[in-house]
Length: 206
Image (tube, rainbow, N blue to C red; front, side, top):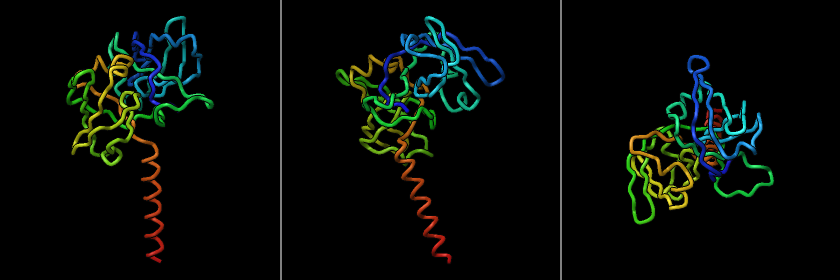
Protein backbone atom coordinates (compact mmCIF):
# COMPACT_ATOMS: atom_id res chain seq x y z
CA UNK A 1 0.00 0.00 0.00
CA UNK A 2 1.06 3.59 -0.69
CA UNK A 3 -0.11 7.00 0.48
CA UNK A 4 0.44 9.22 -2.54
CA UNK A 5 3.14 11.26 -0.80
CA UNK A 6 6.00 11.29 -3.29
CA UNK A 7 9.41 10.61 -1.74
CA UNK A 8 11.58 11.64 -4.65
CA UNK A 9 11.67 11.97 -8.42
CA UNK A 10 13.56 9.44 -10.53
CA UNK A 11 14.57 9.47 -14.17
CA UNK A 12 13.82 6.94 -16.86
CA UNK A 13 17.13 5.78 -18.35
CA UNK A 14 16.14 2.65 -20.22
CA UNK A 15 13.17 0.90 -21.81
CA UNK A 16 13.78 -2.32 -23.73
CA UNK A 17 11.04 -4.48 -25.23
CA UNK A 18 11.79 -7.92 -23.82
CA UNK A 19 8.92 -9.75 -25.55
CA UNK A 20 6.16 -8.36 -27.78
CA UNK A 21 4.14 -5.92 -25.64
CA UNK A 22 6.32 -6.25 -22.52
CA UNK A 23 9.30 -4.16 -21.43
CA UNK A 24 12.26 -4.02 -19.05
CA UNK A 25 12.11 -0.58 -17.45
CA UNK A 26 15.18 1.05 -15.83
CA UNK A 27 15.02 4.03 -13.46
CA UNK A 28 17.77 6.17 -11.97
CA UNK A 29 16.82 6.93 -8.37
CA UNK A 30 18.41 8.22 -5.14
CA UNK A 31 16.40 5.51 -3.35
CA UNK A 32 18.50 2.72 -4.86
CA UNK A 33 20.47 2.07 -1.67
CA UNK A 34 17.20 1.61 0.25
CA UNK A 35 15.74 -0.91 -2.20
CA UNK A 36 16.36 -4.60 -2.78
CA UNK A 37 15.18 -7.08 -5.37
CA UNK A 38 11.58 -8.00 -4.58
CA UNK A 39 10.64 -4.61 -3.09
CA UNK A 40 7.64 -2.65 -4.32
CA UNK A 41 8.06 0.87 -5.67
CA UNK A 42 5.32 3.08 -7.09
CA UNK A 43 6.40 4.66 -10.39
CA UNK A 44 3.98 7.41 -11.41
CA UNK A 45 1.47 5.63 -9.20
CA UNK A 46 2.08 2.16 -10.67
CA UNK A 47 3.14 -0.50 -8.16
CA UNK A 48 6.14 -2.33 -9.66
CA UNK A 49 8.49 -4.97 -8.27
CA UNK A 50 12.24 -4.41 -8.32
CA UNK A 51 13.71 -7.26 -10.41
CA UNK A 52 17.31 -6.04 -10.70
CA UNK A 53 19.50 -3.21 -9.40
CA UNK A 54 23.00 -1.77 -9.45
CA UNK A 55 24.62 1.12 -7.59
CA UNK A 56 22.56 3.77 -9.42
CA UNK A 57 19.46 2.25 -10.99
CA UNK A 58 16.66 -0.24 -10.41
CA UNK A 59 14.84 -2.30 -13.04
CA UNK A 60 11.25 -3.46 -13.39
CA UNK A 61 9.28 -5.65 -15.77
CA UNK A 62 6.29 -3.99 -17.44
CA UNK A 63 3.74 -6.61 -18.43
CA UNK A 64 1.20 -6.15 -21.21
CA UNK A 65 -1.56 -5.23 -18.73
CA UNK A 66 0.60 -2.50 -17.19
CA UNK A 67 1.54 -1.13 -20.60
CA UNK A 68 -2.13 -1.04 -21.65
CA UNK A 69 -3.47 0.64 -18.51
CA UNK A 70 -0.76 3.19 -17.70
CA UNK A 71 1.41 5.89 -19.26
CA UNK A 72 4.74 4.23 -18.44
CA UNK A 73 5.42 2.91 -21.94
CA UNK A 74 5.02 6.46 -23.27
CA UNK A 75 7.93 7.79 -21.22
CA UNK A 76 11.13 8.82 -22.94
CA UNK A 77 14.76 8.72 -21.85
CA UNK A 78 15.12 11.50 -19.31
CA UNK A 79 11.44 11.58 -18.31
CA UNK A 80 10.91 12.31 -14.63
CA UNK A 81 9.02 9.73 -12.58
CA UNK A 82 7.29 10.14 -9.21
CA UNK A 83 8.57 7.50 -6.79
CA UNK A 84 7.19 6.21 -3.50
CA UNK A 85 8.18 3.14 -1.53
CA UNK A 86 5.40 1.02 -0.04
CA UNK A 87 4.32 2.16 3.40
CA UNK A 88 5.65 0.10 6.34
CA UNK A 89 3.15 -1.22 8.88
CA UNK A 90 4.36 1.28 11.48
CA UNK A 91 4.59 4.16 9.00
CA UNK A 92 2.87 7.51 9.34
CA UNK A 93 -0.17 7.89 7.10
CA UNK A 94 0.07 11.25 5.32
CA UNK A 95 -1.97 11.07 2.10
CA UNK A 96 -4.79 8.63 1.33
CA UNK A 97 -5.00 4.91 0.59
CA UNK A 98 -3.28 4.28 -2.75
CA UNK A 99 -2.88 0.73 -4.02
CA UNK A 100 -0.67 1.43 -7.00
CA UNK A 101 -3.33 -0.11 -9.26
CA UNK A 102 -4.08 2.44 -11.95
CA UNK A 103 -7.74 2.63 -12.96
CA UNK A 104 -7.34 4.69 -16.12
CA UNK A 105 -5.25 7.26 -17.91
CA UNK A 106 -6.63 10.68 -18.82
CA UNK A 107 -5.56 13.73 -20.79
CA UNK A 108 -4.40 16.99 -19.23
CA UNK A 109 -6.68 19.70 -20.60
CA UNK A 110 -5.34 22.88 -19.00
CA UNK A 111 -2.42 24.04 -16.87
CA UNK A 112 -2.78 27.57 -15.52
CA UNK A 113 -0.62 29.49 -13.09
CA UNK A 114 -2.38 31.49 -10.39
CA UNK A 115 0.06 33.39 -8.23
CA UNK A 116 2.37 30.80 -6.69
CA UNK A 117 -0.05 27.95 -7.32
CA UNK A 118 -1.01 26.00 -10.42
CA UNK A 119 -4.44 24.85 -11.57
CA UNK A 120 -4.59 21.61 -13.56
CA UNK A 121 -7.72 20.40 -15.33
CA UNK A 122 -7.85 16.73 -16.29
CA UNK A 123 -10.35 14.88 -18.45
CA UNK A 124 -12.61 12.59 -16.43
CA UNK A 125 -13.31 9.20 -18.03
CA UNK A 126 -17.07 8.64 -18.05
CA UNK A 127 -16.77 5.17 -16.49
CA UNK A 128 -15.18 6.64 -13.35
CA UNK A 129 -17.07 9.93 -12.96
CA UNK A 130 -19.01 8.73 -9.93
CA UNK A 131 -15.80 8.21 -7.93
CA UNK A 132 -14.81 11.87 -8.05
CA UNK A 133 -16.30 14.34 -5.56
CA UNK A 134 -15.36 17.85 -4.57
CA UNK A 135 -12.80 17.79 -1.72
CA UNK A 136 -12.28 14.06 -2.25
CA UNK A 137 -8.96 12.40 -3.00
CA UNK A 138 -7.52 11.18 -6.28
CA UNK A 139 -4.04 9.93 -7.18
CA UNK A 140 -2.61 11.62 -10.27
CA UNK A 141 0.63 9.98 -11.44
CA UNK A 142 0.88 8.64 -7.90
CA UNK A 143 0.40 12.01 -6.17
CA UNK A 144 -2.35 12.23 -3.55
CA UNK A 145 -4.34 15.32 -4.54
CA UNK A 146 -7.57 16.95 -3.42
CA UNK A 147 -10.28 17.48 -6.02
CA UNK A 148 -11.10 21.20 -6.14
CA UNK A 149 -13.73 21.24 -8.89
CA UNK A 150 -15.83 18.60 -10.62
CA UNK A 151 -17.23 19.29 -14.09
CA UNK A 152 -19.28 17.22 -16.51
CA UNK A 153 -16.26 15.74 -18.26
CA UNK A 154 -13.29 16.89 -16.20
CA UNK A 155 -11.99 17.65 -12.73
CA UNK A 156 -9.56 20.22 -11.34
CA UNK A 157 -6.75 20.01 -8.81
CA UNK A 158 -4.75 22.91 -7.40
CA UNK A 159 -1.03 22.40 -6.86
CA UNK A 160 0.91 24.21 -4.15
CA UNK A 161 4.52 25.30 -4.86
CA UNK A 162 6.08 22.46 -2.82
CA UNK A 163 4.20 19.73 -4.71
CA UNK A 164 4.89 21.47 -8.02
CA UNK A 165 8.65 21.42 -7.40
CA UNK A 166 8.94 18.09 -5.53
CA UNK A 167 7.17 16.00 -8.20
CA UNK A 168 7.22 15.76 -11.98
CA UNK A 169 4.23 18.09 -12.33
CA UNK A 170 6.42 21.04 -13.33
CA UNK A 171 7.28 19.06 -16.49
CA UNK A 172 3.63 18.31 -17.29
CA UNK A 173 2.23 19.57 -20.59
CA UNK A 174 -1.27 20.01 -21.96
CA UNK A 175 -2.19 16.89 -23.93
CA UNK A 176 -0.09 14.55 -21.79
CA UNK A 177 -1.68 11.44 -20.32
CA UNK A 178 -1.58 10.91 -16.56
CA UNK A 179 -2.30 7.83 -14.48
CA UNK A 180 -5.40 8.02 -12.31
CA UNK A 181 -6.30 5.89 -9.31
CA UNK A 182 -9.63 6.62 -7.67
CA UNK A 183 -10.60 6.27 -4.02
CA UNK A 184 -10.55 2.66 -2.80
CA UNK A 185 -13.21 3.28 -0.14
CA UNK A 186 -15.63 4.57 -2.79
CA UNK A 187 -15.11 1.37 -4.77
CA UNK A 188 -15.91 -0.79 -1.74
CA UNK A 189 -19.02 1.26 -0.94
CA UNK A 190 -20.17 0.90 -4.54
CA UNK A 191 -19.65 -2.85 -4.46
CA UNK A 192 -21.47 -3.28 -1.13
CA UNK A 193 -24.44 -1.24 -2.38
CA UNK A 194 -24.56 -3.38 -5.52
CA UNK A 195 -24.56 -6.55 -3.42
CA UNK A 196 -27.19 -5.14 -1.05
CA UNK A 197 -29.35 -4.25 -4.04
CA UNK A 198 -28.99 -7.76 -5.40
CA UNK A 199 -30.03 -9.26 -2.07
CA UNK A 200 -33.08 -7.00 -1.81
CA UNK A 201 -34.03 -7.82 -5.37
CA UNK A 202 -33.67 -11.54 -4.63
CA UNK A 203 -35.88 -11.28 -1.53
CA UNK A 204 -38.55 -9.50 -3.55
CA UNK A 205 -38.55 -12.21 -6.19
CA UNK A 206 -39.20 -14.87 -3.55
